[in-house]
Length: 144
Image 1 (cartoon, helix red, strand yellow):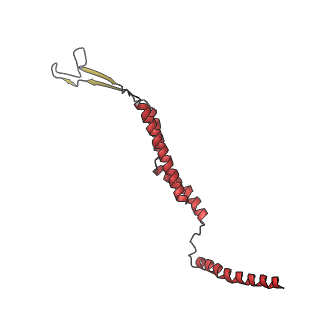
Image 2 (tube, helix red, strand yellow; image 1 turned 30 degrees about the vertical axis):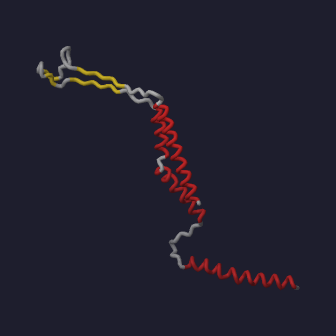
Image 3 (tube, helix red, strand yellow; image 1 turned 30 degrees about the horizontal axis):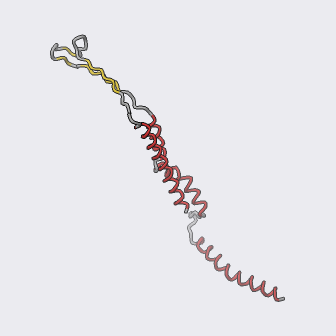
């Protein structure tokens, strides 16, 4: 008999506590216009990650930093230049490129000495890693 009274009192006190809470939650939804979207935090988080994650990654220039690694590994291209005299004032001829005319050919190749190329590659790799870590830190901060 004593257990039965305790169970009834416990049921009544739980009902008295939970009914106003349920009414308050439902009351907030009745005031919303019909076109209002209700989201849970988990759903909002997943939508944010789907739509904004690529945008955040592009703003952090992660792909650009990876491209810098490839560019640092590439050798500099040689430069070939050819110049001709458009007007020869001594012989009064246009485009005088024969045996007595002026011609200039130039070939330039940049040679990196002292491990500069290797250092540039390592710097590019470090910058890419920093960009990835900053992006990971931003994601952690957004989740918490």
